[in-house]
Image 1 (cartoon, protein in one colour):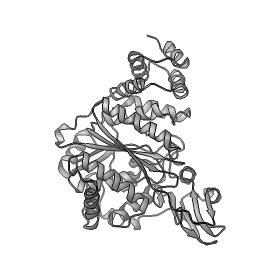
Image 2 (image 1 turned 90 degrees about the vertical axis):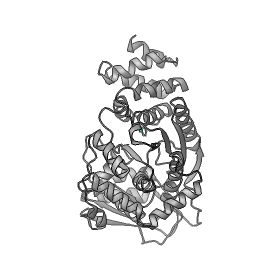
Image 3 (image 1 turned 45 degrees about the vertical axis):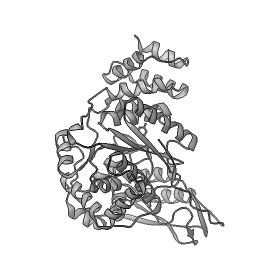
Image 4 (image 1 turned 120 degrees about the vertical axis):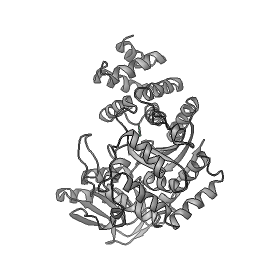
Length: 434
Ligand code: URA
């Protein structure tokens, strides 16, 4: 077998065999296939697509490129959750402690942000002392002891995905259904999930910009799940405007803590309760979705969910007191309001552009090796469908880079639309596909 023939086949819109896909994945992971050859093949896949069989073969080859975690010693059914990415998406950090406080075991490996989307691991690292890179043994021990652990993906978990994902990001090949589906499902399979709930985001701040592509992506992942014997449910959620009010690592953790104390923005609440109710169901802890949602709300009200979050932080090296005092943590040096230039109802806040502005303020990586400024980001003061008077605050910029402020302000104003008629806020939960 030869990589040139494989590239040529995909370039000419032919179907690759399982052996050819495995040859590429193995060769690229161990360095025998060069970056430029992998880039050519990935671009050919991006342009010409893959059959369902090819996508499944790619997923399994990537899952098998490293360790496959065995979570069976934890007991119970381990349900994993993954989002296809978004802006202000702090759902994992809210949802996982809540369901853990209800007795659903959480053993979660998360990723970092790249490009305009944030990542759970960067958010957790904004909590002083929180260690995201602990050994697999300690990870399992923490789940056994307190029912939850959230860590960074270990080095040898789906290493092929790590390489291919980083490559895709540098050659503009992220928004491809077979490539996203195989990337996500390979990680889920390798990290030992028995059942999977996926948040498939749709809109400006998501990789799928319209509902029909999101449906295709969801169905592809569900089919892979079936073949791999991992029941998978997809919740399609709106990502046209940022989720919640806070965008940026520490700012999002502050919103997480507020949520767990009962201050729940409606869009975040809908996503958390919907995904959570399915996770509880798949874990075998309650068949009635409405009851599951009520149980989640109850554990927010009685403080058990917040207590679980604090336990998680303490177990992984942080201090409970840092969560109690999260709003008193040192903030960015510059906190600048953005004033509205006109009065009316907000009809659009472009999540993609808000994500990019947050990156420029220091909240995200422009390049993979960039450092993140945990304090940087944006707090929205108004969301879509809210009324605003000219001169009122639309949002606040948080940054330590004074030189980035003026550009951020004008970019934000360019990406908010205001009109005379009130628009009904769109639904956040668009569809559920099983
Ligand atoms: N999230 C992933 O893990 N992989 C993708 O390709 C896109 C989003």
